[in-house]
Figure 1: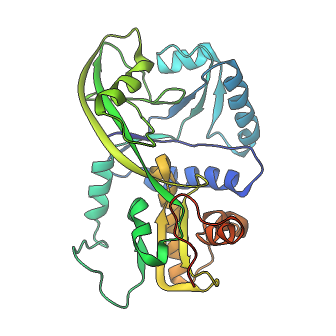
Figure 2: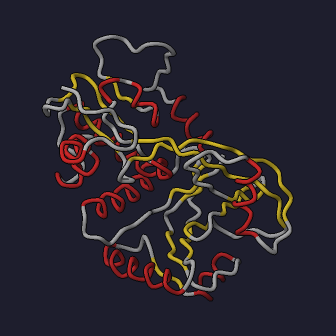
Length: 304
C-alpha cells in the first residue's frame, strides 16, 4: 500500500553504478504527476559514523551532476525529518511516496492499455513480467532469479517523521499511520516474527499495530534487474520473447527504465542507455556466466 521511490547508489565504477543512477532519475521524472505519487523527498539514513562516511562519498561523487541529492549532517537531517537522525542522511528531494494500488490502477485505466485475461494473441511479441515465475517457462529457465518474501507493517504512533526514511530505517508516513518495513526473508517467516523485526526500529516508541502486508520480490543472482530479449545458449534471440524481472526491492524504480529498453527494442529504436549499461540489464549475462561456472539460483542447465 505504500512504498518509496528512491535511489540505491553505488560508486564502484561499473556499468551498474550508472544503471542505478539513471534508473532513479528516469523513474522520478516518469511518474511525477501520476496518480498515487506524492513527491515528498526521502532521507537515506546513516546507520553509524562509518555509514555516514560512505553516504558522504556518494554525495561527493554524484553531487556535481545536479541538485537531486545532498548530504545533511545529523542536526540538519533531524530538523528536516522532525525525527532523531544523529548520524546524518542523504536527502533526495525528488524521491516519492507511492501508493502502488493507485498507480497501477491509473495505468490499467490508460486509454492505450487493454487488459485481456487469458492467453496472449498469437503472433505478437510477448514480454514475460511475472517475477521469479518466469523460470517456469522453458525459454527463461536459465535466468538466475529467485523469490524472496517480505513484510511491511502499519502502526499508529504519536508522532511520525515528516518524510520517508530509508537505508538504516524504512519508515513511511501515511494518512493511515506509519508504515514500517521491510523484512527480507530467504525462507518465509511467521508474520508475527516479521512484525517484531520491523518494529525494532521503533524501540522506545509507543505503537499500536494496525495491519500487515506480505509480498514476494524477484531477486537476481547479481542483484541487478533483467530486461530485454531472451536468448538461446548459442546466442540467438528467442523469437518474440522478452523479459522484465529480477527487480528485487527496487521495482518501483527499475521497471520504468526496463520498459523503455524493451520498447526501444520492439520498435527498432536506439536504446536509451549506453551499450555497456544496457548489457548490465541483458539476460545474456547469465548465459555467459553459466558457460564458465554452471547455473545457480535454481536456473536450469543451458539448453540449445
